[in-house]
Length: 621
Image 1: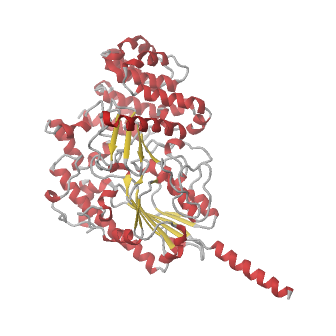
Image 2 (image 1 turned 135 degrees about the horizontal axis):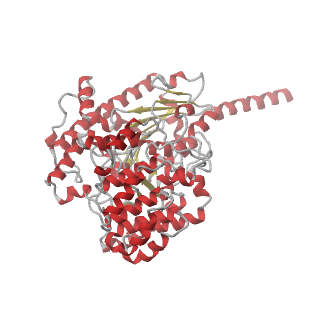
Image 3 (image 1 turned 30 degrees about the horizontal axis):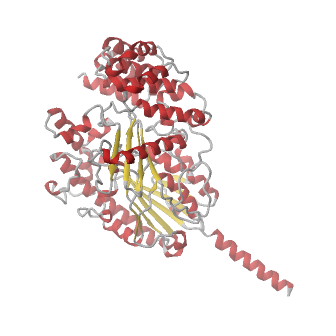
Protein backbone atom coordinates (compact mmCIF):
# COMPACT_ATOMS: atom_id res chain seq x y z
CA UNK A 1 0.00 0.00 0.00
CA UNK A 2 2.85 2.34 0.90
CA UNK A 3 4.64 1.53 -2.40
CA UNK A 4 1.42 2.20 -4.30
CA UNK A 5 1.00 5.55 -2.54
CA UNK A 6 4.60 6.54 -3.27
CA UNK A 7 4.12 5.60 -6.92
CA UNK A 8 1.08 7.87 -7.15
CA UNK A 9 3.03 10.71 -5.57
CA UNK A 10 5.91 10.25 -8.01
CA UNK A 11 3.54 10.15 -11.00
CA UNK A 12 1.81 13.28 -9.71
CA UNK A 13 5.08 15.20 -9.38
CA UNK A 14 6.29 13.98 -12.76
CA UNK A 15 3.22 15.32 -14.52
CA UNK A 16 3.29 18.51 -12.46
CA UNK A 17 6.92 19.06 -13.54
CA UNK A 18 6.07 18.50 -17.20
CA UNK A 19 3.13 20.89 -16.98
CA UNK A 20 5.23 23.57 -15.27
CA UNK A 21 8.08 23.13 -17.72
CA UNK A 22 5.87 23.56 -20.79
CA UNK A 23 6.12 27.10 -22.09
CA UNK A 24 4.69 28.96 -25.07
CA UNK A 25 6.78 29.68 -28.11
CA UNK A 26 6.94 33.40 -28.90
CA UNK A 27 7.41 34.91 -32.35
CA UNK A 28 8.01 38.62 -32.88
CA UNK A 29 7.57 40.02 -36.38
CA UNK A 30 8.78 43.60 -36.74
CA UNK A 31 8.66 46.06 -39.59
CA UNK A 32 10.64 49.22 -40.07
CA UNK A 33 9.50 52.82 -40.28
CA UNK A 34 5.73 52.49 -40.59
CA UNK A 35 3.34 54.16 -38.19
CA UNK A 36 -0.07 52.70 -37.37
CA UNK A 37 -1.88 54.74 -40.00
CA UNK A 38 -0.72 52.67 -42.98
CA UNK A 39 -2.75 49.54 -42.13
CA UNK A 40 -6.32 48.68 -43.00
CA UNK A 41 -7.04 47.32 -39.53
CA UNK A 42 -6.14 50.74 -38.10
CA UNK A 43 -8.66 52.47 -40.34
CA UNK A 44 -6.77 53.30 -43.54
CA UNK A 45 -9.33 52.63 -46.25
CA UNK A 46 -6.72 52.91 -49.00
CA UNK A 47 -4.51 50.22 -47.46
CA UNK A 48 -4.26 46.70 -48.84
CA UNK A 49 -3.06 44.65 -45.87
CA UNK A 50 -5.18 41.46 -45.77
CA UNK A 51 -2.80 39.34 -43.69
CA UNK A 52 -2.34 41.93 -40.96
CA UNK A 53 -6.05 42.70 -41.00
CA UNK A 54 -6.75 38.99 -40.49
CA UNK A 55 -4.22 38.82 -37.66
CA UNK A 56 -6.02 41.72 -35.99
CA UNK A 57 -9.39 40.04 -36.51
CA UNK A 58 -8.31 36.90 -34.66
CA UNK A 59 -5.89 38.57 -32.28
CA UNK A 60 -5.66 41.78 -30.29
CA UNK A 61 -5.08 45.27 -31.69
CA UNK A 62 -3.50 47.84 -29.42
CA UNK A 63 -4.94 51.23 -30.34
CA UNK A 64 -2.35 53.21 -28.38
CA UNK A 65 1.03 51.52 -28.81
CA UNK A 66 4.14 53.68 -28.92
CA UNK A 67 7.81 53.53 -29.72
CA UNK A 68 9.41 55.61 -26.96
CA UNK A 69 11.85 56.98 -29.53
CA UNK A 70 11.15 57.63 -33.21
CA UNK A 71 14.36 56.05 -34.50
CA UNK A 72 15.58 52.45 -34.63
CA UNK A 73 18.75 52.05 -32.55
CA UNK A 74 17.44 54.12 -29.64
CA UNK A 75 14.13 52.26 -29.71
CA UNK A 76 15.90 48.88 -29.75
CA UNK A 77 18.02 49.74 -26.73
CA UNK A 78 14.78 50.46 -24.88
CA UNK A 79 13.23 47.16 -25.99
CA UNK A 80 16.15 44.80 -25.41
CA UNK A 81 16.86 45.93 -21.84
CA UNK A 82 13.36 46.94 -20.79
CA UNK A 83 14.61 50.34 -19.65
CA UNK A 84 14.25 53.80 -21.13
CA UNK A 85 17.17 54.75 -23.37
CA UNK A 86 17.49 58.05 -21.51
CA UNK A 87 17.99 56.12 -18.26
CA UNK A 88 20.67 53.91 -19.77
CA UNK A 89 22.36 56.79 -21.60
CA UNK A 90 21.60 55.31 -25.03
CA UNK A 91 19.33 58.06 -26.35
CA UNK A 92 21.71 59.28 -29.06
CA UNK A 93 21.55 57.49 -32.40
CA UNK A 94 24.34 54.91 -32.82
CA UNK A 95 26.34 56.28 -29.92
CA UNK A 96 27.56 52.95 -28.52
CA UNK A 97 28.22 54.37 -25.06
CA UNK A 98 29.06 51.88 -22.30
CA UNK A 99 26.05 51.07 -20.10
CA UNK A 100 25.84 49.79 -16.52
CA UNK A 101 26.22 46.05 -15.89
CA UNK A 102 22.75 45.83 -14.34
CA UNK A 103 21.14 46.23 -17.75
CA UNK A 104 20.70 42.70 -19.06
CA UNK A 105 18.92 41.90 -22.32
CA UNK A 106 15.66 39.98 -22.01
CA UNK A 107 17.26 37.13 -23.97
CA UNK A 108 19.54 36.37 -21.01
CA UNK A 109 16.50 35.61 -18.86
CA UNK A 110 14.86 33.57 -21.62
CA UNK A 111 17.97 31.52 -22.29
CA UNK A 112 18.44 30.84 -18.58
CA UNK A 113 14.94 29.35 -18.66
CA UNK A 114 15.56 27.04 -21.58
CA UNK A 115 14.48 29.20 -24.50
CA UNK A 116 16.21 28.99 -27.86
CA UNK A 117 16.52 32.64 -28.98
CA UNK A 118 17.03 33.69 -32.57
CA UNK A 119 17.17 37.01 -34.37
CA UNK A 120 16.89 37.39 -38.13
CA UNK A 121 18.82 39.57 -38.01
CA UNK A 122 18.65 43.22 -37.01
CA UNK A 123 20.68 44.25 -33.99
CA UNK A 124 21.79 47.91 -33.64
CA UNK A 125 21.17 47.97 -29.87
CA UNK A 126 23.03 51.25 -29.41
CA UNK A 127 25.37 50.37 -26.56
CA UNK A 128 28.89 49.00 -26.39
CA UNK A 129 29.30 45.27 -26.85
CA UNK A 130 28.67 42.42 -29.25
CA UNK A 131 24.98 42.54 -30.19
CA UNK A 132 25.01 39.04 -31.64
CA UNK A 133 26.37 37.42 -28.49
CA UNK A 134 23.06 37.67 -26.65
CA UNK A 135 21.37 35.27 -29.10
CA UNK A 136 21.65 31.56 -29.79
CA UNK A 137 21.65 32.53 -33.45
CA UNK A 138 21.66 36.00 -34.97
CA UNK A 139 22.03 35.84 -38.74
CA UNK A 140 20.16 35.89 -41.99
CA UNK A 141 19.54 32.15 -41.53
CA UNK A 142 18.45 32.26 -37.90
CA UNK A 143 15.25 30.26 -37.47
CA UNK A 144 13.24 28.63 -34.72
CA UNK A 145 13.32 25.35 -36.61
CA UNK A 146 16.98 24.97 -35.61
CA UNK A 147 16.20 24.78 -31.89
CA UNK A 148 17.15 21.73 -29.80
CA UNK A 149 14.45 19.08 -29.66
CA UNK A 150 11.76 19.96 -27.14
CA UNK A 151 13.05 23.47 -26.42
CA UNK A 152 10.63 26.41 -26.53
CA UNK A 153 11.69 29.24 -28.81
CA UNK A 154 11.70 33.00 -28.92
CA UNK A 155 12.32 34.28 -32.43
CA UNK A 156 12.41 37.72 -34.01
CA UNK A 157 12.00 38.17 -37.73
CA UNK A 158 12.84 41.75 -38.71
CA UNK A 159 11.38 42.85 -42.03
CA UNK A 160 13.22 45.73 -43.69
CA UNK A 161 11.15 46.16 -46.86
CA UNK A 162 9.29 49.13 -45.35
CA UNK A 163 12.43 51.07 -44.30
CA UNK A 164 12.54 54.77 -45.27
CA UNK A 165 15.08 53.90 -47.96
CA UNK A 166 12.26 52.06 -49.77
CA UNK A 167 11.39 55.53 -51.11
CA UNK A 168 14.90 56.21 -52.39
CA UNK A 169 14.98 56.15 -56.20
CA UNK A 170 17.48 53.31 -56.45
CA UNK A 171 15.51 51.12 -54.04
CA UNK A 172 12.22 51.87 -55.82
CA UNK A 173 13.77 50.83 -59.12
CA UNK A 174 15.26 47.68 -57.61
CA UNK A 175 12.03 46.67 -55.85
CA UNK A 176 10.10 47.08 -59.08
CA UNK A 177 12.64 45.09 -61.03
CA UNK A 178 12.41 42.25 -58.48
CA UNK A 179 8.62 42.32 -58.50
CA UNK A 180 8.36 43.35 -54.85
CA UNK A 181 6.21 46.33 -55.80
CA UNK A 182 4.33 46.95 -59.08
CA UNK A 183 5.81 49.06 -61.85
CA UNK A 184 2.77 51.34 -61.67
CA UNK A 185 1.35 52.29 -58.30
CA UNK A 186 -1.91 50.63 -57.27
CA UNK A 187 -3.28 54.04 -56.24
CA UNK A 188 -2.88 57.05 -58.47
CA UNK A 189 -0.81 59.73 -56.72
CA UNK A 190 -3.61 62.20 -57.38
CA UNK A 191 -6.00 59.94 -55.43
CA UNK A 192 -3.94 59.30 -52.28
CA UNK A 193 -5.19 60.64 -48.98
CA UNK A 194 -2.78 63.37 -47.95
CA UNK A 195 -2.25 63.85 -44.24
CA UNK A 196 -3.00 67.46 -43.26
CA UNK A 197 0.50 68.20 -41.94
CA UNK A 198 2.05 67.58 -45.37
CA UNK A 199 2.21 70.06 -48.25
CA UNK A 200 0.40 69.04 -51.42
CA UNK A 201 3.42 68.41 -53.64
CA UNK A 202 3.56 65.89 -56.53
CA UNK A 203 6.67 64.18 -55.14
CA UNK A 204 5.06 63.64 -51.73
CA UNK A 205 1.90 62.27 -53.32
CA UNK A 206 4.00 59.92 -55.44
CA UNK A 207 5.96 58.72 -52.41
CA UNK A 208 2.73 58.00 -50.53
CA UNK A 209 1.36 55.99 -53.47
CA UNK A 210 4.59 53.97 -53.68
CA UNK A 211 4.66 53.37 -49.93
CA UNK A 212 1.16 51.90 -50.04
CA UNK A 213 2.63 49.31 -52.43
CA UNK A 214 5.55 48.79 -50.08
CA UNK A 215 3.20 48.16 -47.15
CA UNK A 216 1.30 45.63 -49.23
CA UNK A 217 4.63 43.92 -49.98
CA UNK A 218 5.32 43.89 -46.24
CA UNK A 219 1.91 42.34 -45.63
CA UNK A 220 2.67 39.63 -48.18
CA UNK A 221 5.94 38.79 -46.43
CA UNK A 222 4.14 38.58 -43.09
CA UNK A 223 1.56 36.28 -44.65
CA UNK A 224 4.33 33.91 -45.74
CA UNK A 225 5.83 33.88 -42.23
CA UNK A 226 2.45 33.06 -40.67
CA UNK A 227 1.79 30.36 -43.28
CA UNK A 228 5.19 28.81 -42.59
CA UNK A 229 4.45 28.73 -38.87
CA UNK A 230 1.12 27.03 -39.49
CA UNK A 231 2.65 24.43 -41.82
CA UNK A 232 5.26 23.61 -39.18
CA UNK A 233 2.47 22.59 -36.81
CA UNK A 234 3.59 25.17 -34.23
CA UNK A 235 0.88 27.81 -34.64
CA UNK A 236 -1.19 26.57 -31.70
CA UNK A 237 1.85 26.66 -29.44
CA UNK A 238 3.09 30.11 -30.48
CA UNK A 239 2.17 33.60 -29.30
CA UNK A 240 2.66 36.06 -32.17
CA UNK A 241 3.52 39.74 -31.86
CA UNK A 242 3.63 42.10 -34.81
CA UNK A 243 4.74 45.70 -34.37
CA UNK A 244 6.41 48.55 -36.26
CA UNK A 245 9.77 49.62 -34.86
CA UNK A 246 8.72 53.31 -34.90
CA UNK A 247 6.90 55.68 -37.21
CA UNK A 248 7.61 57.06 -40.60
CA UNK A 249 8.15 56.94 -43.45
CA UNK A 250 7.02 60.04 -45.29
CA UNK A 251 8.12 63.53 -44.11
CA UNK A 252 7.52 64.51 -40.48
CA UNK A 253 7.34 60.86 -39.47
CA UNK A 254 10.55 59.16 -38.47
CA UNK A 255 12.61 61.20 -35.93
CA UNK A 256 9.57 63.24 -34.82
CA UNK A 257 7.71 62.90 -31.52
CA UNK A 258 4.43 63.43 -33.29
CA UNK A 259 2.24 60.32 -33.59
CA UNK A 260 3.46 59.95 -37.17
CA UNK A 261 6.86 59.14 -35.64
CA UNK A 262 5.96 57.28 -32.45
CA UNK A 263 2.46 55.77 -32.68
CA UNK A 264 3.00 52.26 -34.00
CA UNK A 265 0.85 49.30 -35.05
CA UNK A 266 0.91 46.43 -32.55
CA UNK A 267 -1.04 43.20 -33.00
CA UNK A 268 -0.83 40.16 -30.73
CA UNK A 269 -2.29 36.72 -31.35
CA UNK A 270 -2.53 34.31 -28.42
CA UNK A 271 -3.64 30.79 -29.46
CA UNK A 272 -6.43 29.10 -27.51
CA UNK A 273 -3.98 26.86 -25.68
CA UNK A 274 -2.39 29.91 -24.03
CA UNK A 275 -5.43 32.14 -23.64
CA UNK A 276 -4.96 32.14 -19.86
CA UNK A 277 -1.95 34.41 -20.46
CA UNK A 278 -4.08 37.19 -21.96
CA UNK A 279 -6.99 39.08 -20.43
CA UNK A 280 -7.98 40.32 -23.88
CA UNK A 281 -10.55 38.68 -26.12
CA UNK A 282 -9.97 37.68 -29.72
CA UNK A 283 -10.65 40.61 -32.01
CA UNK A 284 -10.46 43.15 -29.16
CA UNK A 285 -9.23 46.68 -29.78
CA UNK A 286 -7.38 47.55 -26.60
CA UNK A 287 -7.62 51.07 -25.18
CA UNK A 288 -4.81 50.90 -22.60
CA UNK A 289 -1.52 52.48 -23.60
CA UNK A 290 1.61 50.38 -24.12
CA UNK A 291 5.10 51.28 -25.28
CA UNK A 292 8.42 49.62 -26.06
CA UNK A 293 9.64 49.82 -22.48
CA UNK A 294 6.79 47.40 -21.66
CA UNK A 295 7.82 44.68 -24.11
CA UNK A 296 10.61 43.04 -22.09
CA UNK A 297 8.55 42.83 -18.85
CA UNK A 298 5.64 41.43 -20.87
CA UNK A 299 7.86 38.85 -22.51
CA UNK A 300 9.15 37.67 -19.13
CA UNK A 301 5.60 37.68 -17.74
CA UNK A 302 4.45 35.37 -20.54
CA UNK A 303 6.89 32.72 -19.31
CA UNK A 304 6.05 33.36 -15.65
CA UNK A 305 9.04 35.49 -14.60
CA UNK A 306 8.92 38.58 -12.41
CA UNK A 307 10.24 41.84 -13.78
CA UNK A 308 13.84 42.58 -12.68
CA UNK A 309 14.28 45.79 -10.69
CA UNK A 310 16.08 47.65 -13.46
CA UNK A 311 13.24 47.17 -15.96
CA UNK A 312 10.94 50.17 -15.96
CA UNK A 313 7.98 49.03 -18.03
CA UNK A 314 4.68 47.30 -17.29
CA UNK A 315 3.83 43.71 -18.18
CA UNK A 316 0.56 44.01 -20.10
CA UNK A 317 0.11 40.27 -20.65
CA UNK A 318 1.09 37.04 -18.92
CA UNK A 319 1.05 35.67 -15.40
CA UNK A 320 2.66 38.81 -13.99
CA UNK A 321 0.44 41.31 -15.79
CA UNK A 322 0.07 44.68 -14.10
CA UNK A 323 -3.12 46.58 -14.82
CA UNK A 324 -2.65 50.15 -16.07
CA UNK A 325 -3.25 53.04 -13.69
CA UNK A 326 -5.62 55.87 -14.52
CA UNK A 327 -2.69 58.28 -14.64
CA UNK A 328 -0.41 56.12 -16.82
CA UNK A 329 1.81 58.02 -19.22
CA UNK A 330 3.89 57.16 -22.27
CA UNK A 331 7.30 58.85 -22.18
CA UNK A 332 8.84 59.92 -25.49
CA UNK A 333 12.34 61.19 -26.24
CA UNK A 334 14.48 62.44 -29.11
CA UNK A 335 18.07 63.70 -29.03
CA UNK A 336 20.84 63.37 -31.62
CA UNK A 337 19.71 61.60 -34.77
CA UNK A 338 22.70 60.72 -36.90
CA UNK A 339 24.84 63.87 -37.16
CA UNK A 340 22.25 66.45 -36.01
CA UNK A 341 21.52 67.42 -32.40
CA UNK A 342 18.08 68.49 -31.17
CA UNK A 343 16.68 67.55 -27.74
CA UNK A 344 12.93 66.99 -27.30
CA UNK A 345 10.78 65.19 -24.74
CA UNK A 346 7.13 64.23 -24.80
CA UNK A 347 4.28 62.62 -22.91
CA UNK A 348 1.04 60.94 -23.94
CA UNK A 349 -1.72 60.71 -21.35
CA UNK A 350 -5.33 59.61 -20.81
CA UNK A 351 -5.32 56.60 -23.13
CA UNK A 352 -3.89 58.51 -26.05
CA UNK A 353 -5.93 61.70 -25.57
CA UNK A 354 -3.27 64.33 -24.85
CA UNK A 355 0.21 64.83 -26.27
CA UNK A 356 2.73 67.26 -24.79
CA UNK A 357 6.07 67.99 -26.47
CA UNK A 358 8.81 70.24 -25.11
CA UNK A 359 11.78 71.40 -27.13
CA UNK A 360 15.00 71.91 -25.21
CA UNK A 361 16.68 73.30 -28.34
CA UNK A 362 13.85 75.49 -29.70
CA UNK A 363 16.25 77.84 -31.48
CA UNK A 364 16.75 75.12 -34.09
CA UNK A 365 14.41 74.45 -36.99
CA UNK A 366 12.27 71.30 -36.93
CA UNK A 367 13.81 70.04 -40.18
CA UNK A 368 16.01 68.36 -40.96
CA UNK A 369 16.95 66.04 -38.10
CA UNK A 370 19.19 64.02 -40.42
CA UNK A 371 20.57 64.48 -43.91
CA UNK A 372 19.74 60.83 -44.65
CA UNK A 373 16.09 61.69 -45.20
CA UNK A 374 16.97 63.63 -48.35
CA UNK A 375 17.24 60.33 -50.15
CA UNK A 376 13.49 60.70 -50.56
CA UNK A 377 12.06 62.86 -53.34
CA UNK A 378 9.26 64.00 -51.03
CA UNK A 379 11.64 65.47 -48.45
CA UNK A 380 13.73 67.13 -51.16
CA UNK A 381 10.68 68.67 -52.80
CA UNK A 382 9.42 70.07 -49.50
CA UNK A 383 12.78 71.70 -48.81
CA UNK A 384 13.01 73.07 -52.34
CA UNK A 385 9.51 74.55 -52.14
CA UNK A 386 10.50 76.25 -48.89
CA UNK A 387 13.66 77.67 -50.48
CA UNK A 388 11.62 78.83 -53.47
CA UNK A 389 9.13 80.59 -51.19
CA UNK A 390 6.11 78.75 -52.58
CA UNK A 391 4.81 77.19 -49.35
CA UNK A 392 1.88 78.29 -47.24
CA UNK A 393 2.57 79.58 -43.73
CA UNK A 394 1.50 76.21 -42.31
CA UNK A 395 3.85 74.21 -44.50
CA UNK A 396 6.95 76.36 -44.10
CA UNK A 397 6.98 76.43 -40.28
CA UNK A 398 8.92 73.17 -40.02
CA UNK A 399 11.94 74.76 -41.73
CA UNK A 400 12.08 77.91 -39.64
CA UNK A 401 14.27 78.43 -36.57
CA UNK A 402 12.80 79.43 -33.22
CA UNK A 403 10.20 76.70 -32.94
CA UNK A 404 7.57 76.69 -30.17
CA UNK A 405 9.04 75.57 -26.85
CA UNK A 406 5.85 73.74 -25.99
CA UNK A 407 3.24 71.91 -28.01
CA UNK A 408 -0.03 70.51 -26.73
CA UNK A 409 -2.35 68.44 -28.86
CA UNK A 410 -5.78 66.94 -28.32
CA UNK A 411 -5.30 63.70 -30.23
CA UNK A 412 -8.98 62.88 -30.05
CA UNK A 413 -10.00 65.87 -32.16
CA UNK A 414 -6.65 66.42 -33.90
CA UNK A 415 -5.03 63.00 -34.53
CA UNK A 416 -2.43 64.38 -36.96
CA UNK A 417 -1.29 67.14 -34.56
CA UNK A 418 -1.69 70.25 -36.66
CA UNK A 419 -3.30 72.53 -34.04
CA UNK A 420 -0.97 73.46 -31.20
CA UNK A 421 -3.08 74.36 -28.16
CA UNK A 422 -0.17 75.48 -25.96
CA UNK A 423 -0.92 79.19 -26.41
CA UNK A 424 -4.68 78.80 -25.97
CA UNK A 425 -5.76 80.09 -22.52
CA UNK A 426 -8.56 77.53 -22.47
CA UNK A 427 -5.95 74.78 -22.13
CA UNK A 428 -3.60 76.53 -19.71
CA UNK A 429 -4.29 74.11 -16.86
CA UNK A 430 -3.80 71.07 -19.08
CA UNK A 431 -0.53 72.54 -20.36
CA UNK A 432 0.73 73.28 -16.86
CA UNK A 433 -0.19 69.80 -15.68
CA UNK A 434 1.61 68.09 -18.56
CA UNK A 435 4.66 70.31 -18.10
CA UNK A 436 4.96 69.34 -14.45
CA UNK A 437 4.40 65.68 -15.25
CA UNK A 438 7.26 65.80 -17.76
CA UNK A 439 9.56 67.34 -15.17
CA UNK A 440 8.68 64.58 -12.74
CA UNK A 441 9.20 61.91 -15.39
CA UNK A 442 12.63 63.20 -16.33
CA UNK A 443 13.69 63.18 -12.69
CA UNK A 444 12.12 59.78 -12.02
CA UNK A 445 13.88 58.19 -14.99
CA UNK A 446 17.20 59.94 -14.29
CA UNK A 447 17.10 61.32 -17.80
CA UNK A 448 20.70 61.47 -19.06
CA UNK A 449 19.63 63.91 -21.74
CA UNK A 450 20.03 66.61 -19.13
CA UNK A 451 23.77 66.18 -19.78
CA UNK A 452 24.88 67.24 -23.28
CA UNK A 453 26.50 64.30 -25.05
CA UNK A 454 29.93 65.99 -25.42
CA UNK A 455 30.08 66.00 -21.61
CA UNK A 456 29.66 62.24 -21.22
CA UNK A 457 33.36 61.58 -21.69
CA UNK A 458 34.35 64.69 -19.75
CA UNK A 459 32.27 63.96 -16.65
CA UNK A 460 32.31 60.17 -16.62
CA UNK A 461 35.25 58.85 -18.66
CA UNK A 462 35.52 55.53 -16.82
CA UNK A 463 31.91 54.74 -15.84
CA UNK A 464 28.52 54.74 -17.62
CA UNK A 465 26.73 58.07 -17.54
CA UNK A 466 23.79 56.45 -15.72
CA UNK A 467 26.09 55.64 -12.80
CA UNK A 468 27.36 59.21 -12.77
CA UNK A 469 23.78 60.49 -12.50
CA UNK A 470 22.85 57.77 -10.04
CA UNK A 471 25.37 59.17 -7.57
CA UNK A 472 23.93 62.66 -8.00
CA UNK A 473 20.21 62.05 -7.61
CA UNK A 474 19.90 65.04 -5.29
CA UNK A 475 21.33 67.34 -7.97
CA UNK A 476 19.26 65.97 -10.84
CA UNK A 477 16.04 67.79 -9.96
CA UNK A 478 17.88 71.12 -9.89
CA UNK A 479 19.33 70.40 -13.35
CA UNK A 480 15.90 69.52 -14.76
CA UNK A 481 14.37 72.63 -13.18
CA UNK A 482 17.15 74.75 -14.68
CA UNK A 483 16.63 73.20 -18.13
CA UNK A 484 12.95 74.15 -17.97
CA UNK A 485 13.82 77.67 -16.79
CA UNK A 486 16.43 78.04 -19.53
CA UNK A 487 14.01 77.03 -22.27
CA UNK A 488 11.12 79.17 -20.98
CA UNK A 489 12.53 82.22 -22.80
CA UNK A 490 11.43 84.47 -19.94
CA UNK A 491 13.56 87.63 -19.37
CA UNK A 492 12.64 87.47 -15.67
CA UNK A 493 15.11 84.58 -15.40
CA UNK A 494 18.06 86.61 -16.72
CA UNK A 495 19.76 87.26 -13.36
CA UNK A 496 19.42 83.62 -12.35
CA UNK A 497 20.89 82.39 -15.64
CA UNK A 498 23.85 84.79 -15.38
CA UNK A 499 24.55 83.58 -11.86
CA UNK A 500 24.46 79.95 -12.98
CA UNK A 501 27.32 80.63 -15.41
CA UNK A 502 29.47 80.72 -12.27
CA UNK A 503 28.23 77.33 -11.02
CA UNK A 504 30.68 74.59 -10.06
CA UNK A 505 28.67 72.23 -12.26
CA UNK A 506 29.32 72.26 -16.01
CA UNK A 507 25.78 70.90 -16.49
CA UNK A 508 24.33 74.00 -14.82
CA UNK A 509 26.71 76.25 -16.77
CA UNK A 510 25.58 74.61 -20.02
CA UNK A 511 21.88 75.19 -19.35
CA UNK A 512 22.60 78.75 -18.23
CA UNK A 513 24.36 79.47 -21.53
CA UNK A 514 21.50 77.83 -23.44
CA UNK A 515 19.00 80.01 -21.61
CA UNK A 516 20.95 83.15 -22.51
CA UNK A 517 21.20 81.97 -26.12
CA UNK A 518 17.41 81.58 -26.26
CA UNK A 519 16.85 85.05 -24.79
CA UNK A 520 19.02 86.59 -27.51
CA UNK A 521 19.15 90.39 -27.38
CA UNK A 522 17.18 90.36 -24.14
CA UNK A 523 20.24 88.80 -22.50
CA UNK A 524 22.71 91.49 -23.66
CA UNK A 525 23.70 92.20 -20.05
CA UNK A 526 25.28 88.76 -19.88
CA UNK A 527 27.93 89.56 -22.50
CA UNK A 528 30.89 89.84 -20.05
CA UNK A 529 30.01 86.54 -18.37
CA UNK A 530 29.54 84.80 -21.73
CA UNK A 531 32.92 86.04 -22.96
CA UNK A 532 34.46 84.61 -19.81
CA UNK A 533 32.66 81.31 -20.53
CA UNK A 534 34.50 80.98 -23.84
CA UNK A 535 37.36 79.65 -21.71
CA UNK A 536 35.18 77.15 -19.82
CA UNK A 537 36.64 73.70 -19.17
CA UNK A 538 33.76 72.08 -21.07
CA UNK A 539 33.54 72.28 -24.85
CA UNK A 540 29.70 72.25 -24.81
CA UNK A 541 29.64 75.33 -22.57
CA UNK A 542 32.19 77.14 -24.73
CA UNK A 543 30.24 76.39 -27.90
CA UNK A 544 26.87 77.30 -26.40
CA UNK A 545 28.27 80.56 -25.01
CA UNK A 546 29.79 81.46 -28.39
CA UNK A 547 26.44 80.78 -30.06
CA UNK A 548 24.72 83.07 -27.54
CA UNK A 549 27.21 85.85 -28.26
CA UNK A 550 26.66 85.50 -31.98
CA UNK A 551 22.89 85.83 -31.50
CA UNK A 552 23.62 89.07 -29.58
CA UNK A 553 25.56 90.44 -32.55
CA UNK A 554 29.10 89.59 -31.43
CA UNK A 555 29.83 87.68 -34.61
CA UNK A 556 33.59 88.16 -34.78
CA UNK A 557 34.44 86.95 -31.30
CA UNK A 558 31.86 84.14 -31.55
CA UNK A 559 33.15 82.93 -34.91
CA UNK A 560 36.73 82.89 -33.68
CA UNK A 561 35.74 80.90 -30.60
CA UNK A 562 33.68 78.36 -32.57
CA UNK A 563 36.29 77.71 -35.25
CA UNK A 564 39.00 77.40 -32.61
CA UNK A 565 37.13 74.40 -31.14
CA UNK A 566 38.03 72.36 -34.23
CA UNK A 567 41.72 72.82 -33.47
CA UNK A 568 41.43 71.42 -29.96
CA UNK A 569 41.68 67.83 -28.80
CA UNK A 570 38.03 66.91 -28.27
CA UNK A 571 35.92 63.78 -28.07
CA UNK A 572 34.00 62.95 -31.24
CA UNK A 573 30.66 64.23 -29.91
CA UNK A 574 32.17 67.58 -28.99
CA UNK A 575 33.38 67.92 -32.59
CA UNK A 576 29.91 67.03 -33.91
CA UNK A 577 28.25 69.53 -31.57
CA UNK A 578 30.71 72.26 -32.55
CA UNK A 579 30.22 71.65 -36.28
CA UNK A 580 26.44 71.60 -35.81
CA UNK A 581 26.65 75.02 -34.20
CA UNK A 582 29.03 76.41 -36.82
CA UNK A 583 26.59 75.34 -39.54
CA UNK A 584 23.60 76.81 -37.67
CA UNK A 585 25.47 80.09 -37.38
CA UNK A 586 26.24 80.15 -41.12
CA UNK A 587 29.97 80.06 -40.47
CA UNK A 588 30.79 76.94 -42.48
CA UNK A 589 32.91 78.93 -44.90
CA UNK A 590 35.32 79.69 -42.05
CA UNK A 591 36.20 76.02 -41.62
CA UNK A 592 39.43 75.53 -43.52
CA UNK A 593 39.76 73.16 -46.44
CA UNK A 594 42.76 71.68 -44.64
CA UNK A 595 40.60 70.71 -41.64
CA UNK A 596 37.99 69.11 -43.89
CA UNK A 597 40.67 67.19 -45.78
CA UNK A 598 42.24 65.96 -42.53
CA UNK A 599 38.85 64.91 -41.11
CA UNK A 600 38.05 62.90 -44.23
CA UNK A 601 41.41 61.11 -44.14
CA UNK A 602 41.57 60.51 -40.38
CA UNK A 603 41.12 56.79 -39.80
CA UNK A 604 40.34 57.49 -36.14
CA UNK A 605 37.53 59.93 -36.94
CA UNK A 606 34.06 58.57 -36.29
CA UNK A 607 31.40 58.35 -38.97
CA UNK A 608 29.37 61.43 -38.03
CA UNK A 609 32.41 63.70 -38.01
CA UNK A 610 33.25 62.38 -41.46
CA UNK A 611 29.65 62.76 -42.63
CA UNK A 612 29.68 66.43 -41.63
CA UNK A 613 33.06 66.91 -43.30
CA UNK A 614 31.64 65.37 -46.48
CA UNK A 615 28.69 67.77 -46.36
CA UNK A 616 31.05 70.70 -45.98
CA UNK A 617 33.17 69.50 -48.89
CA UNK A 618 30.11 68.97 -51.08
CA UNK A 619 28.78 72.46 -50.31
CA UNK A 620 32.01 73.99 -51.64
CA UNK A 621 31.88 72.36 -55.03
